[in-house]
Image: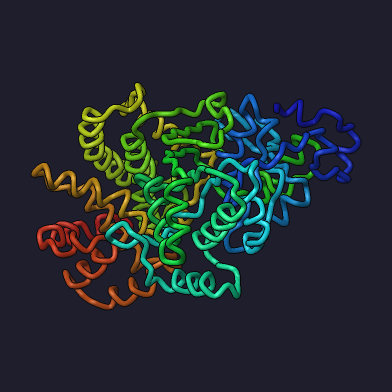
Length: 483
């Protein structure tokens, strides 16, 4: 919907008087499609990406989303107050455009596990999509569920006793899948949209692992009836500000308490089976491929890897946004160096695997990333990207470092990213990480002992390699302010 369409039906006096109507389905005559998709992880990215794609599908009238929050109910409360509707603000250098998205038809507090189970057990529900963050899958170094993680143990105790509802996204999903099995509602797809390599396999291992630890019969049902779809998702979506809310009011003539701002660029690559059907996401540009790994790695290494590198190097040098950090010659040089290492290994991997006829187009992708990162109107904050580094670096820096060293090269650019995280972990006033306590303990050590201890939190095998420890240690201080 254009700005002009957003204003349709609003009188100039209403738009200028301050007594603006609240966004709702009566105001925009947006019908509610039936719930066919359940989503876990209601946040800005889901709304700018999967919800947006669903609203753009040619059969959107058949596909509604029931979206559940994670830790807090706030997003569900806000969206429920306007019938699930929200505005996507596409922010380009040339200006903003506005579109109302109506694919979310139910916004629910994630703690309402009873409602989640009801919806997942409904025969009309075809899939569960996930944006629950990388850390939520609780896999150990062996790629299997860490059943000793405290929150996993707690959920298993709740599931086994039947005395309470699980509290993690993984536990809630397994609880809901058990309800679908009991209802005899048939096969269903689980679609992972988190930034993880082989994310469909990650989701499978996490769900199957928790199911097996709870109920062997449920684990067998999951194996036979649940498909796990891998995806590569891409759309820069910064946090919404009060200024963004005001901009929607001024341009559209209504109040929206939950707009989402995103760059114009968006990408979705999917691989897997949908046994109960899916929307025609390809109408909005989604791509379906046989082998997704090259596309996953292109995004994880080039986009997400550069984001992590900018998050740590940029903040060490006093910057707050991606655009500001990229404008710093030292940060830009580090990104280009990491991209050079990643590109060599992406090209080699892609040459040995079919990607369903799609081309990675890495040089063009790099050019597009530079343009996207430089969009100063998208205030993508480095502090937000920097969170959960011990988890993110395993997918973004470690594979490139390992691939480079396997080819007899140093991998210094990937090592530099890890070193920047180590420097940031000691310098940051606020450090958000699932291993924050362990990081703090490791930072009490000195010299290579400290580097080894911190590297062990990211990848124990690398920490055992003296040459890698020395390589990372040699990159410490690269991004000191004024260097």
